[in-house]
Every structure is written in structure tokens, then in C-alpha cells.
Image (cartoon, rainbow, N blue to C red; front, side, top):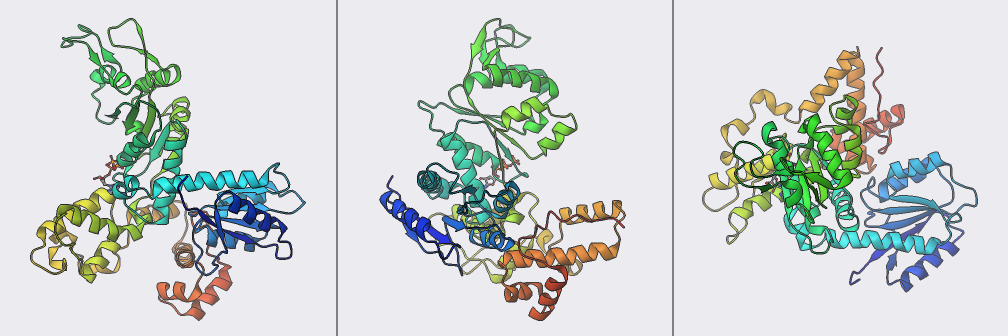
Length: 470
Ligand SMILES: Nc1ncnc2c1ncn2[C@@H]1O[C@H](COP(=O)(O)OP(=O)(O)OP(=O)(O)O)[C@@H](O)[C@H]1O
């Protein structure tokens, strides 16, 4: 593979360098460069050897893997087997994989195969196909792209894309089709389950024979036939009525179907990609979505992050959309207040909404110089009251609602909001107290005191916190 691969190797077992040295040699023989880990600014894929599980190991893993967004292999070199619970904690802290050196028959080959697969995925990730169409350098986005690439290119499994509206599910479905290595691949067929007219659903999926119903003047292929040897993308799968879910399940299992009005079995063979902005697992619990179908379509589940979880992509995406409008002209810049506004505002419609706003800004902007606040439409401009709270969004309100329903009082809500803000700031600043304090607009000392009181660490999970009613 013409891919310059480099990984860091770090060992916490300082007095015992035999195994890391053996790995470095094996990597060299495999054509993989190794380097030492830069603890101040860790970056890229790596292998971390450790002797014993400790909470500090979790903190280190969280840091060097950027909370699981860089690929880090954690390998125990102790003769004592690692407890399952510890292995799970290491995975939760960000390890991409965990195993014991002693328990593996061929540890070096095992490590090198993993690193090779990860490098092959990263090679596709950095290719123009991905970089030109699916913009975003944030770790959250890159991590989801890696999952998608692995599922698309190295398996033929059905993929379920979950994500809010406008997060790029259709774009990803197209990428999965393009990356599918099937030979003689045919079309990508898109069917929006949310807009299918119930009376025509059978024909849309299965096709029909001539005279099958009034208006069926000639035979017609349905989605299953058109997608054969290609990809079937079922958008808004959560909207599929229960009756159609049964029929779809049959086709997915048997790969055969009959046209409406037909009597012979037709064979089909497609790769299935489904998308939804609903919580399908919850729909299964509520009996609104068949569990057998869910497990068939969700062999790989990829959750696309909303824009609020990848804020660092907002400005690059805006520039991309602005410049897409005028490819032959000099790039348009954004004035600082406009940049700040774009970073602070909410995007319930995610990237689609950002794209529309960028197009509007581009079309309202005249003359040379950067885009200034005047280009923002009237309803974008914050009022005096809203200015303080323009970070506020519907999820925050829902969480408060939930707490109040549970009988949690204002004091407890305020305490948790404060602790959450501190944890998030510490996590975002990778445990750097000064930077986190600056972000929180408090002194370093005040942050130290609060941290000591609440024993807060950057990787104690914010979302895992339970609110206890009084
Ligand atoms: N990473 C990205 N880079 C560039 N453009 C993007 C990216 N993600 C999404 N877009 C653009 O945002 C818009 C919405 O994307 P898409 O239709 O794929 O979202 P979706 O999740 O399928 O939305 P919905 O659930 O509403 O159907 C499209 O114009 C798409 O080109």
C-alpha cells in the first residue's frame, strides 16, 4: 500500500522495554514508521502499553485518544489477566481496542493488522472523494467518517444512519454506495419512506405487472429491482408503516419478492442503507417499529453528529458554501462579528441551515471586503434580551423540564448546570486548568476549589450524571 504510515508507541512500564522494542522492530519490518508520543500535543494513531489498570491510565487514554477520536490500541503486558470491567473502562476512556499481550497467540501480527486496517481507512478518509464532498475536520466528524468508511469499504453489511435533519445522512449514503467494492456495481436507488403514498407503496417497492390495478398500463420495476446489484437507500425508515415493515423484512431475509399482480418470484441482491432522524431503538420499545427488522437493518449503526457537536466545522463549512457560489472569484472573508454570530447561533436544521444562511449572506454581500453584520437578515439579529442567552437551545429546556417533572429543585439544577459547565470546559481544554478557567470566566483558584470540592475530572462523563430527586 502506498501509504506513509506512522504510529506512536508509548509504554507505561518504564523498566521493561522488551515488548515495545519488539513492536518497533516489527513495525519497521512491516514498513510502518514509529515515533515517540508527544504528551503535550498527542496526535494520530498509537499503541499504549501498560502494566496495571489505574484511573490515571484512563485519564491518559482519554487525552491521547482525544476521547476516542484518534485510534489508540491499549495493550496490557501484565502476567495477570485484566478484569473485564477494566477493559470496558479503557474502551470507554477512548481506546479503540484493548487486549493482553500474553493472551494473544501472535500479538505482533495482531497489532500490525489492526494498524493496517486503520491506515487503509484513513487513506480513504483523506482522499479527494471524501475531503471534497464531506467537509469537516472536527474529531467528531472524522470519527464518524471512519466508521462509515470501514462499514462501506470493508463489509457488505446493512448500515443504519441516525442523525438529526440536515446532518448529511443522504451524502453519507451516497458515499457508502461509492465505496462499496462490489464488482460490476449498479445504481443507488433512493426511496423516501416518509413521502410514499400508501396506495402506491407496493408498486414503489415491488414494481407491478400490466393491469395489476387501474392505471397500471405497462409493467414497471420497483425499488427492489432497480437497486439489484447496487444500493437501496431507504430514507426516513422510521416512517415506514408496520404493514410495509413485514414485507421489507421478507425481502431482506429471502432476497426474493413478487411484483404487484405478478405470480413469479423475482430475485434481488442489493446493499441496504437506511436513515432516520428518529430514535429507532425507542420506536422498537414502543412497538412502532419491528424489532426483527431493526436488527436486520442495523448491522452497523452510525450516528451523525449535529452541528452543535462539531462547532469547529462551522466556519470552514461556511467558507466552503460561500466559495462554491463563486468558484472563479477570490474567496470572500467574514468580518469578526459575523464569525462570532455564526459560531454562537443555533442550527436546528444543521448543515442544511448553515448552507442556506451562507448562500443568503453571499448573495446579500456586495463590493469588496469581508461580509459584515448588515448582510444578516432581520430575523437573524439578536434582540437585547436574547443577546445574553443566544446559546440556549431546545435540549437544554427539555433537560430542565425533565428535572422539574422529577421534582428536582432550582438549587440542584443550578448545581448540576455549574458542574456540567466545569466538566465540559475541562474536557474541551483537555484538563488545562488555566484555559478552562478562562473559558468559564472565573479565576484559576476558583476553578481549583470547585474541582477539589466536586472531584471533577475532564473525562467524568457529563451525560452519565444522574439527577437525584429530593
Ligand atoms: N459534511 C458536509 N459537507 C458539505 N456539505 C454537507 C455536509 N453535510 C451535509 N451537507 C449538505 O447539507 C445539506 C443536507 O444534507 P443531507 O440531505 O445529506 O442531510 P440529511 O441528514 O439527509 O437531511 P434530512 O434528514 O433532512 O433528509 C445538503 O445540501 C448537503 O450537501
